[in-house]
Length: 301
Image 1 (cartoon, one colour):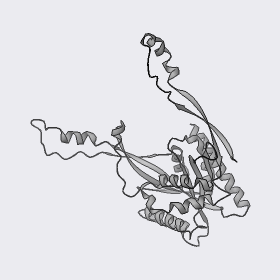
Image 2 (spheres, helix red, strand yellow):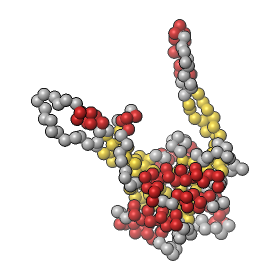
Image 3 (tube, one colour):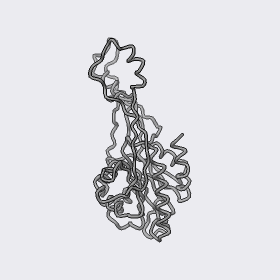
Image 4 (cartoon, one colour):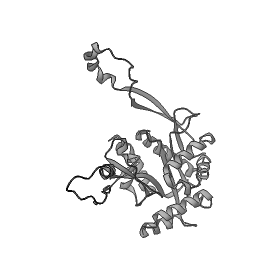
């Protein structure tokens, strides 16, 4: 049974006609604005993660970790997600389809000895190690026998899913956590960790590469070094609503996945290459509540 449904409106381009009557070009131009777009209504429904979602959840986790997926035990993480009957939501069009989005939370302390969580915690420690202050604070939350519990929020979706699905998913997560705590289940978190996919833009190097292969101009030096792409320090979010986390984070740490390479997007008609990165946010319980309350107006703005 679906938990709830959410109707979203998306735009899609109509199929192009295979022939055109040139004599009617004027009338076609006048109607072009109306023919540019069709509206397609899609009902997204929210379901509990289940065994049949195992492979799709693994793919979403692999998307979250990118090149670092080989350091994770994705199957184990997917099993933990599916094994939580009280907490977690998948977004689908129909119950038997693959999830398009996933939101859940895992107790890193309660599952601290699970091999998949051991690898995840080792990974986080290694990535945050470059920031001594953040490393010490994270270590206090993840150390064996920690007084408080820390939840890892998994928020991942296909790239073309609209951000409007995020507010209802987070509201449901907050409700489920509250109900689980009332049932004395291990979801009474003092802190939350959220791993966000981010990226930087870099000026394309393709023009420089093309100039290198062109014949040198008369009177110009031929030994000039190759022009490198200029790095843009502005960090951008793949899931734009996660930028709101910055207002509520106790602290955050930026890092890049292993073997990160610039994707020179000039080949797909943009002026920038893309450097993938990640940002690890840490929020208190109170700040997570505040984030969720602000999420819907932020997405609508």
